[in-house]
Image (tube, rainbow, N blue to C red):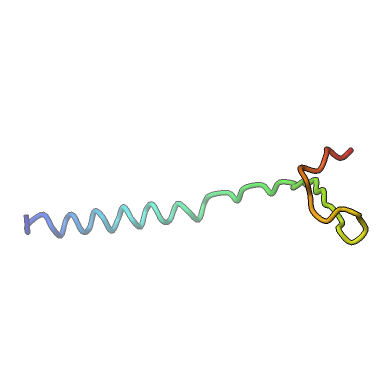
Length: 59
């Protein structure tokens, strides 16, 4: 066991170095567009005190 330990450590070190160096060559992912539809209820300009259900679909 002790005889193979330096070889095992060297193998782990080389494989770790090789796998971590490949990270530098990866291309960055393309940035995508973000779209959002937000619907809200204005409580200050409304007679409603609370929301009784879901807000209906907006056009």
